[in-house]
Length: 345
Figure (spheres, helix red, strand yellow):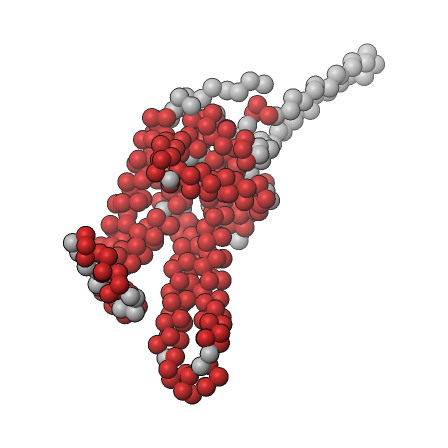
């Protein structure tokens, strides 16, 4: 059966459709991304809070417990204090990485069923191929590290061709990590401008406009002032004098308040970028569906042989109606539960 040729949607149609899906399921997406995003921030806060509190009270602790007056003991104590926060950060970061695949499955479910939930089933899309998923991330990490080297800066152009690797991974389970990059490249060939425009729209919206909006909310709620004060206290313990010996030669000095303002703006940007990951995933999933002609890779589908029906003169063959269930590359349990009424859960 040949692959049907679909009329391709333009980039603006894909963006607005993706934005609509994001808004219609905003509560579900925010709930799903809450721990992956906030967990990283809270984990870092907890780590710095415990270490800063320990170092600030170290003279009192040594006075009360003389056994602490030892470099090895102090170092061991600091390591122990960092473990809870680092555990939270690591778990949240891992969930954030898994979301790069799970959100594509959610986008597919939203297109097919109109609903988004059952996060575990969507996470299992990545966990069922976890070795391949880790290998894909390692390859992508190597690519970004090499592209970050100034002499290889032009390699960033290929990001336009590799932008759909996580969609290919989600919907085409038979491909190896290297083949996933190749398939993304093949889908993007001849569509460089369209991919670039979509990247530009999503980049400006989620990496620039949204962070500015979160900063305004921080200012309105006095959260900017609170965070700046907290970061300023921590920054005052940094070796600013030594740092300014270098920066003064460039015509400026760094203060604890300057560092605190930068950190506060970074928190606002991280929140905006993290919680809009679903929007980016949805749009690129729709782009993948459009360029691939659907969510299934029909080229790799085995052709089923037709059974020969022998007619017998003595018996009359009566045709019974057949009811075919449409098969899609989505967990059947997700589709079944999506068709139930909301009050049945």
